[in-house]
Image (cartoon, rainbow over all chains, first blue to last red):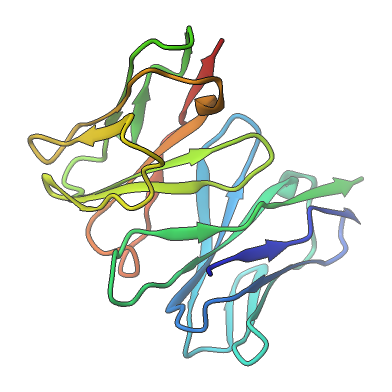
Length: 114
Length: 115
């Protein structure tokens, strides 16, 4: 079945790079997403990558996709205290079905220490 | 409004009661999604509307859950005979069209507590 796995916690120092990893099981996934959730706030889409790409860069964010290993990572360069949040990996699969059904991981809580 | 609006922000209800949760999507967004997020978990898909019709309701956990979107804008998630296990944050999102084409914008959620 469909499943998305993430490590639950990551702690880094301000200014360092953060790497959040995710594995997924559905090889038919077409899009993979990274969302950010701050305390008391809604989910914010950070970036997404189409399954035929292996890398996408957007300012401090770099997404790497290894389709063979079904592994997705999000790298945040020069991590700031404002980056402290929970980061969710999500996949959209079911090419024959709903366009709206995202499968989310449990989230990785990123703590940034000054 | 500027974003997706969900009301109420918090709802406490007694076990066995009926509740309605409301979602006002961004104006002009034809797609609307409901998710449920339990404590310490990622959001779990419930139902997806394209216009007025439910394009995919495969995530609704049982027949106590029902959602409508009669005019293709506001949506209401209805839960009958609530159980303590229904306690969660219910998230609504909307987008212009297909999820892969555009970003889905999430509301702040309704925190439902069943006591």
